[in-house]
Amino acid sequence: MAIAISKAEARRLVDEIREHAEGLRGLLVRLHDGEGWRALGYDTWAGCCQEELGYTKRYANYLIQAERVQERVGTIVPEASVPEAQARELTRLPEDQQGPCWQDYQEECVDQGEKPTAAGLREKVGVWSADNEPPDIDGDVIDVEPEPPPHDGEDARIARIRELAGQLAREKGAAVAAAILENVAEEIRNAEQ
Image 1 (tube, helix red, strand yellow):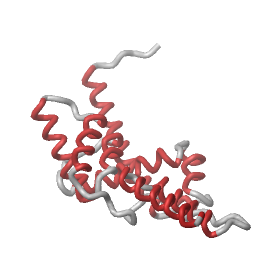
Image 2 (cartoon, helix red, strand yellow):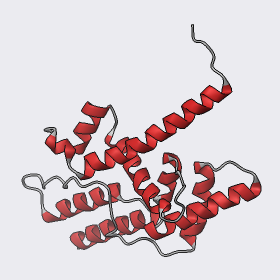
Image 3 (cartoon, one colour):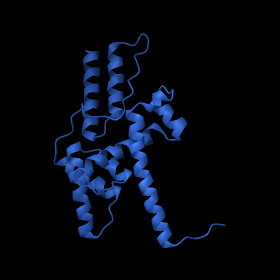
Image 4 (tube, one colour):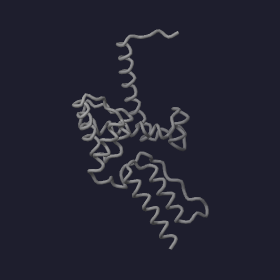
């Protein structure tokens, strides 16, 4: 039977867990960017995530994105600690807008006496996105694994569609996804003519 702990002990544990979680994100960035997964003998980042960490590649990439957002936000708000779910929402904005948007949202929450949430930040990001240009299609993406080569006998048109689909899977913003889908549709139309 578990022994109940005090509120002070529970608070201390939560703070410690948060500290370790933030450190974990930085370690994942080092493992990914330093290609530690290759050094361990894995052909893919996904394989390393699954076998070594018990994470899906998608979840590990969310944590890496959160760390990168944290680094950007930290240049504007040094004491900031951006939860992973909120960082995920911020990735829908261009990098130079992530910190100011997050800071603006935090200040709004304080002014209104509300707790910051990912859902609330999603709304704020939507307002910021509507007021700004869509991000550059060639922007930074987290997934550095190369696209698979075309299958034997696959024509250039299909290979290009596969390449664009892979790019779409890595992109963050809805505007970027729409632009990529439009490129795919245009290439299909051109190929059919």
